[in-house]
Length: 199
Picture (cartoon, rainbow, N blue to C red):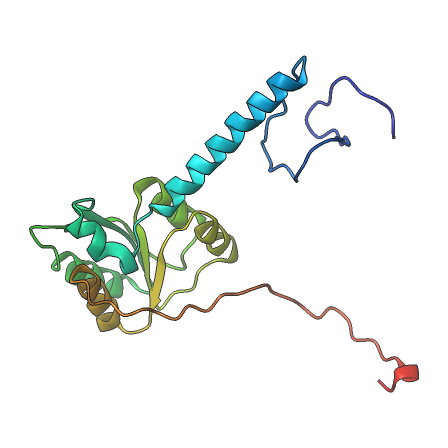
């Protein structure tokens, strides 16, 4: 209502002035006595954010798998595997795990039937895994999180393409893959006729 308030319990809308950007849900606000402390705290927060961004860039991906194996950084390739039917999951899991070598072991941290969802992506984040989907789609929210967290999601319609890509990545022979980026989704709710402009 435009009044100054000293506290704002949960679900209370308030207007905050002096913030340089849009805060994310769950961000904390700190009150300090002077500008020097505020600058120090701001610098620490920026460094923490930069550190998180750098860690996100270090996630495993098929494109950089060979370099990481050669550098000794990868001993185990973890995958989250989703397919349209149980038979496909089992066949693909066995075929991929058979690609294991003495340099790198392939391990399925989760296998399941159905579309790639949020929990699959979050599991891939915490276990530093790549997601392989066979004849499945990715839920919009899961797609958003995977992009934000730099989780490598690969979807295939032919089982041998998935096997060949993982094998080629391990051997350093994987060719670049053209990715389709969805900029947004729109739904036409209503169509209006405007006679003055000829429609």
